[in-house]
Amino acid sequence: MTQKISTQLYLISPLDVSGGFPERLERALDEGEGLITAFQFRVKGMDQHEAAALAEPLQQICADREVAFIVNDSIPLAKRLGADGVHLGQSDGDLTEAREELGKDAQIGVTCHASRHLAIEAGEAGADYVAFGAFFDSATKQTEHRADLDLLEWWSAMVEIPCVAIGGITPSNCRPLVDAGADFLAVSGAVWSGDEVAAVKAFKEQISGK
Image (cartoon, rainbow, N blue to C red; front, side):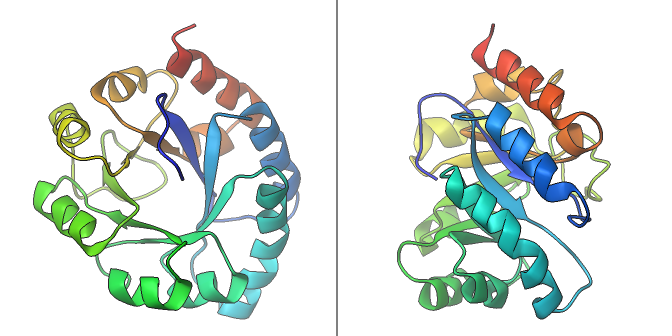
């Protein structure tokens, strides 16, 4: 994910990506052309073989649209798929190990909650981006940490590594995050809980200010 002037969307999958989800992903990415630059594959509670079978068609959809395909948590799955990168929580593995396994071109992101210290550490260890949050209550994931706009403003002023804002972000509440300097907005429930095309369009309007 290359840093751009305007804020981009980082789309996170729902936990269920079976059935008609590939078609939903195609519609969302087509509506968000130029806005959605990364998609994170996030599933839980299944073995690597099953996860890979679900991931492969989604990975192809992303590749066809030049959207980065990022695997959540699992360095082995990211390596197996030849994914564009991996996103690591604080307990999901070592960034140095991920770099060794996935190579110098892999996009590796790290969850840093609301911690400047964790973010600086991740940057020094070679993270390609850091994720801060949660900024709002999320129906997708239990939130233990709450970040504020000052953190985004400080990071964007001090550090060149892109930052991702995460946690309960919707079209109606995203604008302050854009203004505070978030390079990416990580969104999931706001898109997949309803009409994905309408949701992406609404994000586009809010981010562009039109």
